[in-house]
Image (cartoon, rainbow, N blue to C red; front, side, top):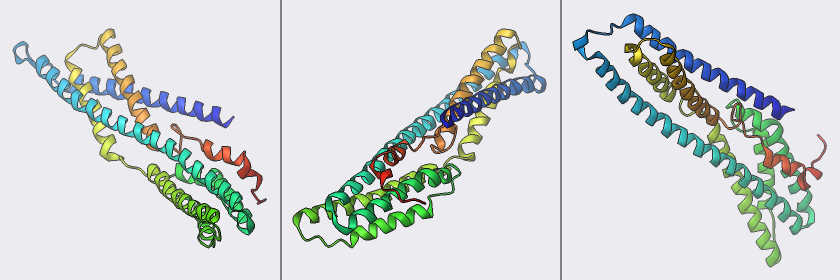
Length: 265
């Protein structure tokens, strides 16, 4: 049910952005029609407006293309990081079981509490750009301290303890990568030039009469620009709608052996 709600919310957000960009394009066109004179026949106003539109559109499309590609690459990187972190957690969980002894249950329960906090608390914090959960850090630190305190007596135990130390430290690195991806990076540095470019390009078409065909074509331009801007916005925070990545790798851990040792709250 929550997934359907998220999808509907994303669709409505996308539809709203597309309508807004169409409105910006048409409003810019009509304002330019009212404020600017089309010029005399020998002024070559049509040629100048076309040259300006082409040059600004080239820069505008380059900016949108580069930012879109970067955001998409970062989005895919976050998805890969989630899987890698879940694998590292699973490795430490299973190695603790292989190590045996008094260390097994405390480490496994600590990891189970950590995963539960990530799913139930930390995801929401990242969606609001509030950073990582201090409670999750506490659980990770407790697990890491127990792993560091191991005193292996055999070659097998030495290998397992070294592997657990390495993987537990790796979990912290993946956490920091997750937090970095939720930070606002562009704000006005991107959205300002993006909207201004849209306005300038649209205004440059003021030399053409507002026929039905021209208005439809301008609306197509606004709609496509809106789609690109919407996806850039969606990819900018992978923990919140409209481009929310659900914590599926961690949920699968809770639905498996990790969830079985989760102590009651």
